Image (tube, rainbow, N blue to C red):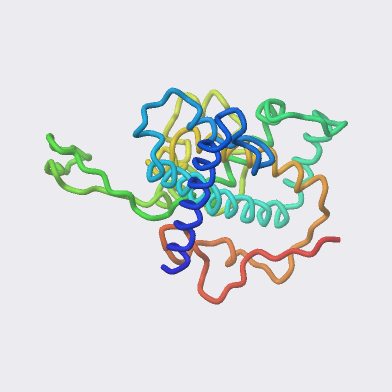
Amino acid sequence: MGLVFQFQQRCNNIVERIIEEQKIQGSEKTTSQFSQPTLFHDVLNSNLPPEEKSPERLAQEVQVVIGAGAETTGKMLTWTTYYLLENPEKLNKLKAELNRLDPDQIATLIDFEKMPYLTCVMLEGLRLSYGVSSSFQRISPDRNLQFQKWSIPAGTPVGMTSTLIHYNEQIFPDSHEFIPERWMDQEKRKQNPSRDIWSPSRRGLVSHNNDSLARAEILLAIPNIVRRLDLELYETTREDVTIAHDLFLPFAREGRKGVRVLVR
């Protein structure tokens, strides 16, 4: 918990510096200590009500942006890299699409969003990295919930871990396998929302904008990883990317060292 408190204090310090700089220099010069404007400069320079600009409110926002956007995205990229290296035919298929659609390596995020196999790799990587594995509780305050033959009384906390969906064989056959091709049928995805995955924003952890930011980071990172680096797995097995412990986030079996690679 000491590390958590240190992190919270750092977030408070960041916000205090931005607010103090704005007071001293004026809103037009609030970015001098940063290489580029941040979303917190935009908030302070906006017409939002004062309570939305309070130090406490902005410090909490810093924690959400960093905390919700770092660990989940980083784990997804790490575990997806493992699955691509474990399945060289899928890695080669992804490289072939990137080379065909972006031969000069100048694609933008909008271009990457239109690449079908890259999108499928992202979705399958999200499915197998789970996002948040803990069970989020929801309560229906004023009416009973009906689930099949069971009636759940109003006021009863109900929750479920995302792994039950991601490993549901009726929705995802061979659910423990990395199969990006299962996402290729875009019309089927649109018609069957249940075939989508439980990303953090859909489970109430972060905002839709944060989820969009995470997907943007993923779509920009994966092409750079697979095109610029020639990697091979080093003393890493499927155990390193298989959930064994639910500590809010999914973790592999205790004692595992995580995904390790050699750069060739």
